[in-house]
Length: 66
Length: 159
Image (cartoon, rainbow over all chains, first blue to last red; front, side, top):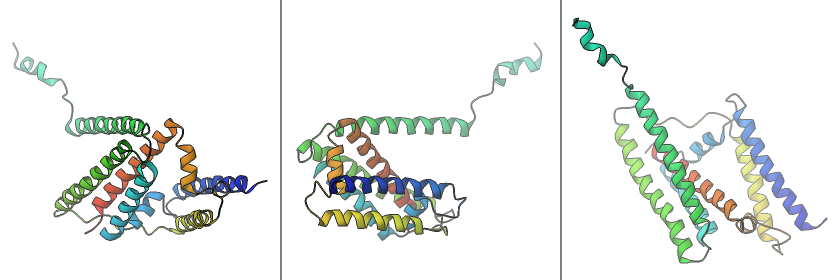
């Protein structure tokens, strides 16, 4: 087994982890924050909201334009 | 002619206000989704580091900035007579912080290790995935959708 395979396996695990957390929070009957709640908390103030917006812009530029 | 007969033609139930508004809103949403999907398809045809790719990526960035400013003003103006924005949730956030920490740590670990083939970062995985144009279009559409959600949330944030 190469490092390449191990790394890809861990990335796949990360993706499953995120999906699992997303589903768990939705079916938790309001005990856990959903991803929408988490987003609202991250953007609680105008400054933190602006930071999230800038990160989104950077991601788009990094992936699609560069 | 009896008096009641005069009103027969007027008794056809007209479309109610809220129902009509909802229908228009639904149509607008589907139009926006279709337009974004079409835009994403053409954006996926571009190659990074080219003028076309820059333009196709810059247009949503400019639109998002303008929408953020506009949305913020509209929501603030409306809120003068309404209650303020919903307060942040009291629900437990730890699953998201843990997930973010684990993914961030793994990304950093891969970034600091070489060669890249053995330790692919999120960017290098994207580079491989973006060779497929439909997949790249889906990713671009996802990025647009995330931007829309961020702009809407930003507009609702308390000033």
